[in-house]
Amino acid sequence: MPEARLDYQKIKNLAKPGFVMEAPSMERLYINAGLALTDLLVDINTVQDQERHTIVVEAPNKEGLMAAWLGEILAHYQNSGFLCRRIVFDKFDGKRIQATLRGEKYSPLRHGHIHAIKGIAETLEFGERLDTHPVFFVKVLFDYR
Image 1 (tube, rainbow, N blue to C red):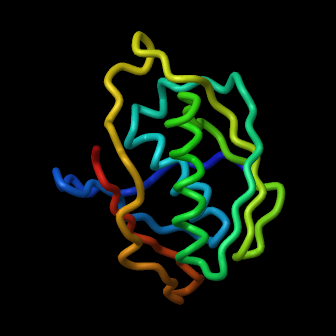
Image 2 (image 1 turned 120 degrees about the vertical axis):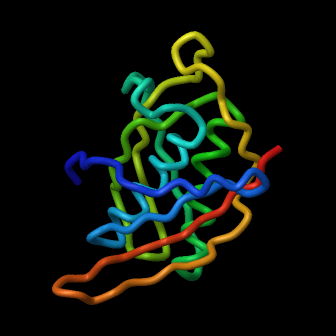
Image 3 (image 1 turned 30 degrees about the horizontal axis):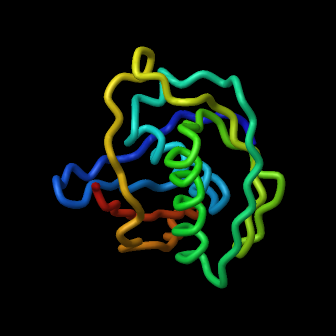
């Protein structure tokens, strides 16, 4: 899927930060949610496309898949310092994602302060609207350390 401008609204709650976003497809919603997570950690524009990681997540429904997806991206940062800059889905069917993440390891000098997100608190809203074309949306909150 071609690179698109990352467009989301930050939720600036000190206890549970997060984001609200919409996208023209379910696939784009998951891709943009992963990129928004990186952008909440650091300014995504400071992250370079140097390394490649492949991840696979599964869940029985779209809410569970979103939580597993974001949890896996966050785990890559927490375990190895990897920050995602670009995402390409190799497979997406609404219950399973196989994706290639492009990015680099966290560098304090280049990326600055990192916001300490511990995990996904909850997916409050998830759905779609049908205006003249389908619009998919999600609202996600995170736990701080």
